[in-house]
Length: 202
Image (tube, rainbow, N blue to C red; front, side, top):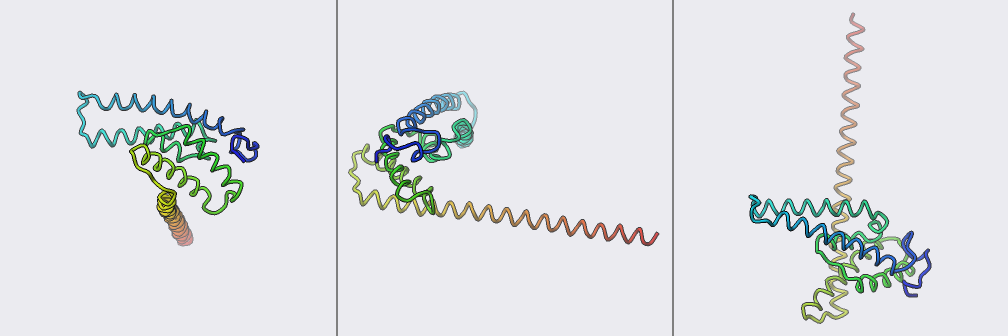
């Protein structure tokens, strides 16, 4: 079934068609391009006395801040297509036809495989692969389906590694918090013992 003909239940929440999703994406990208143009104009002025590295760091932080604001303003879109927003802000890339073609694949994949397991990573990897294939063709290359599969697999490996690293950071942070709470509790018990002993010796 074409994604443009899918029912509301087969679409991400609140959307009724791929065209509607793409319309929101168009609007978001126009905003991002406008705000990025202002950023680049501000920080690329020759009279700004900062080093190239400082300028890059400032721009990187500004782009992340922009991404955060876009996510906040388009929460539903961001929940389903975070990689699209990241490509828009960090790569200044968006192509409506490519996105709609991706949405057709996305709807079929959701319908056939559901949202379990690696689904979220798979959806991100597929979009990133399609963007890279588009760029290769635009540069005069002729990637095959085998190239597509190879790149998809490589991106999936990278995303899984990133996810595992993120989970490890979360586990480490939780363990540090647990130990801190334990130390605080043990310290409180020791202080209570000292107070009780002082009271008993009065």
